[in-house]
Length: 121
Image (tube, rainbow, N blue to C red; front, top):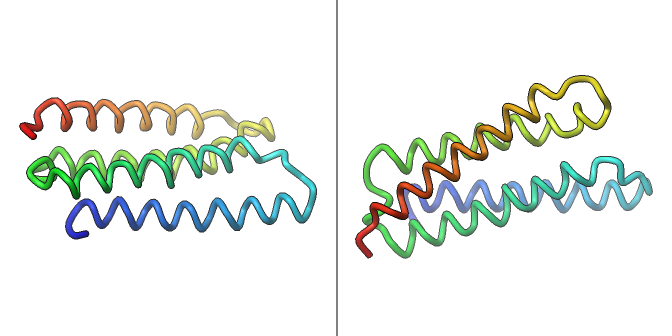
């Protein structure tokens, strides 16, 4: 795997490792308050990024240009905002990061939709 596909797979693996460690920590402490954030890290980080990686790997022409790079940036922004944002919202400190991360997630999926629609394969 090379190029943008590799970057997405690296994001997926890092997210999976983080999610596993976080899950073990929650289990060991028997405190599952942050399980929504843990679930979002696993879904948006591990699952979505893996799917994106395989898509770009299997359809390399779709990885060309600026749009896939914007897609990657939007996914990174999503994880950077949403994963700490959910715990902050749960703790009733602020919902700003969670809301911003949700919008970034929507933007990243819209970008991916355009990538898929313009693909010729």
